[in-house]
Figure 1 (cartoon, rainbow, N blue to C red):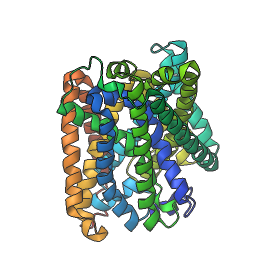
Figure 2 (figure 1 turned 135 degrees about the vertical axis):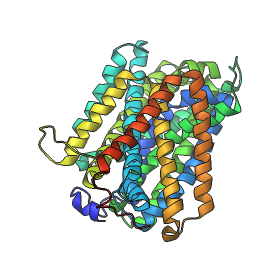
Figure 3 (figure 1 turned 180 degrees about the vertical axis):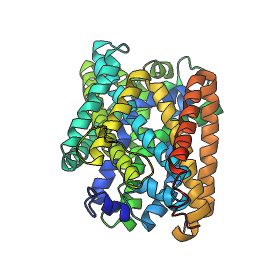
Figure 4 (figure 1 turned 60 degrees about the vertical axis):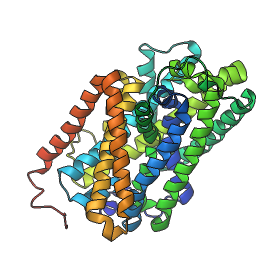
Length: 441
């Protein structure tokens, strides 16, 4: 808990179980539904609802290690704490922690671009400079709300999470009812899909659930963390899989697979029109705008806290660049700048792919660390950890194979990015890790 005390802004028992669930679902719902449904359908074919189920199952196995660590040592260091306890303060722990932080920044830009795609859809604008401009605008809005204070973020996230889940549930049930529970995505001129494509789609589905790590990163602040961290993660994943499945079937009941793929950046809005008419279309666009804007807000808040914690743990260097105020204010600025840059230069498909690569590599490092060094202290079952590692390897291999065929450049960007992160951390930490190592294994 030392890092929690050092980071002043982290308050013990300040987040209830309900608040933790709202925080987790707030990050998850937005990216998973509005940004990824169409892209998952493009890879998985008519089986795309099943991809969400498999993604939830793999995420459940993955969450096991995080829950065991966070329940044993509740800390607002979260994933950084898990990595540091497993590997010590060195380039492996710091590099994987930085990958996690960067995958969260990537999620911000993903959801921000999705916000822009939906808001501009009523004007028949699906490309052009307005998309990145509006994406940057919503990221800046999230920045302004964040600097207003933690209470504003907590209240806003709780209200928005409730609105999102309720609104999306109404959309899903009504669309299915209107269609007579027919699954149109199974018909039409379906493009070829394969088992490899389905497994690759699970990588994006996992990305839709990775928001559970936000709960892990707030472990030191959750009431009764030894019990409630695991509960909050389990409830969040369960809620999200229900919502995701409901919407996947609703979209599939209104559109053929080809239509879903063609409208992959705004598939819910496209599905609303045949089901509900013009008013339903506009209502869905409004719901998407609210959901994605709140998702950006929750993500900006979470990643700025994580970067501040990594700075406090001396895992990454820090420069004020002439700015005043606390470190978390500075990391908010860094977060906004990086996310805005990604939103400007990458489209939704590439942003999602980059996030999947970063997250899966980070998760493999975490799972191996818990298995190799911490399973006896935490009581974690070795078979579960090894199964999670195997799932990660299979999904990453399939996703890489598909991307090498469709967009090899993004694989190159991912390799350069991941290698660069670990090389940077090795250069930064090599001068003092020997004298200040807390690796006790």
